[in-house]
Length: 153
Length: 153
DNA sequence: TATTGTTATACTCTATAACTATA
DNA sequence: TATAGTTATAGAGTATAACAATA
Image (cartoon, rainbow over all chains, first blue to last red; front, side, top):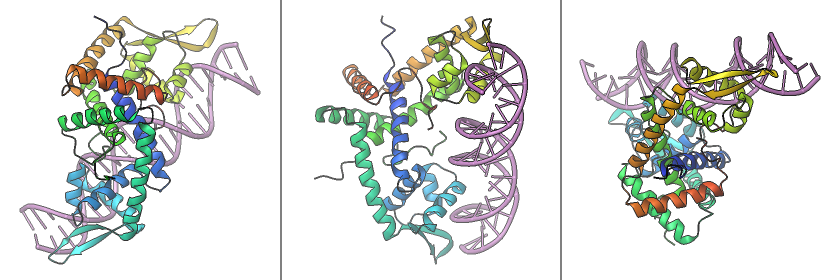
């Protein structure tokens, strides 16, 4: 009956999601990282030794884009490409100690970011929100831990 | 104590917000509209007669970008520029009947979109989510009704 | 011939800055 | 001179396609 009850949850999710993504990008810019770089670093840490093709598939990005992202992390000594002697076409990707150290700082930033975004809610509300969002993420088949911004936004 | 309890709400908001934005973009593509065009059309309808400068400020986009967006809607007869006789520099923007008709279809799409995104939740959960998201949107000062994707994403 | 990684190229979106017309 | 709108230009980010090395 009432058609004027304001925006729906989907609209609010888009607004808040965009806002949260922007705020996170600002925070990790202090570490001289972009969101795609951060997602890639985390993906390499989550599954060490994967090929660039495998990572491209996981993240949903073309291999050519991955090359540039890996280049940036490689040049800064955060990850390294190890050639596989059995198949010299493959580059197994690994996080270096410096990369691990940076991942620790990323985790700290993520925690502060989360507190910032949900700061207006009390603990019970935060828990409820977390549960509801998790339910939706599962329902829509979103890959756990994979930042968006890869699949044809 | 437990550091391995999965992603936080901020991360989930980013994932779901990006997903929802993408799905909405797909839906309104059927109406041959982009998200920025849709947001602009809604903004013009919400405050008829505004100047392009005023709309640019409201949406947080440079005036030059607004020109192209208005051009697209104007050429399709969805909005019209009316010159102000008192100050011929100004273009007062109005939605045409065709634009109003399209806004009706956009509202239908938005409703279907919302049902899609929150479909995994029962009515009580949907209501709870809506309340929590609204609280966060207010806390972060997000402009009601204004799609993101305008302010320096 | 097929596959991994790479390079070259082009396209989309957006912002910045220069320009015009009105005031 | 200041402002609304417009046009011109350039930059960032990404995708597509061609290429080289290895299998």
